Image (cartoon, rainbow, N blue to C red; front, side, top):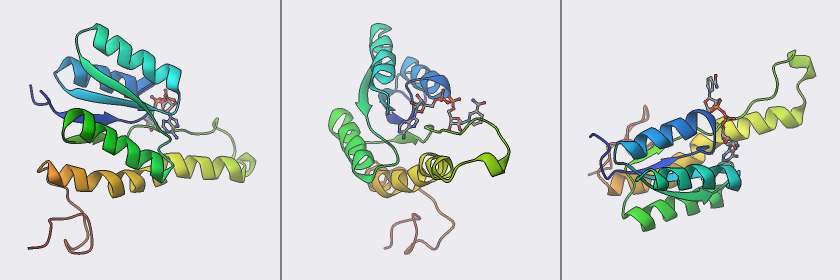
Length: 151
Ligand SMILES: NC(=O)c1ccc[n+]([C@@H]2O[C@H](COP(=O)([O-])OP(=O)(O)OC[C@H]3O[C@@H](n4cnc5c(N)ncnc54)[C@H](O)[C@@H]3O)[C@@H](O)[C@H]2O)c1
């Protein structure tokens, strides 16, 4: 039971792969914060997990918004006392089509949900992960990046 009692955020857990990840981690004893931008979908997953005897709480947040991600991390720490794992699963893409038909708006949305969200997650979650003793590594030298804390 490697995730027993671990405090875990799963983003985009209201459907698809994220839902499966959240359900499995909760079934293995994890304490799961089910995130989604879609409240109905996320609530359903968290309720189902609790009904099956697992521990889960839903938190609505848009992973492209810094304030939302910050609040999501705070919620996990408050609810579960710490943060051990973040699964950056939330993602989106436009329907497959020739590149010249992809609107700038859609491109920006793909970039924000699939890429910027990872940056925001790191900014807000890494301090909490470090407090929990999780080793967070980076390709940058420790003093500049997410690597080992100085000293
Ligand atoms: N399904 C595949 O074949 C496949 C293949 C490779 C990678 N992926 C990646 O896996 C991840 C999940 O894919 P899926 O097929 O389960 O997708 P999905 O659309 O079923 O689930 C994505 C979830 O993310 C949520 N979401 C979207 N924008 C959000 C936001 N801004 N903030 C919070 N939540 C948001 C959606 O509401 C949805 O519940 C994505 O990152 C996707 O790119 C999927």
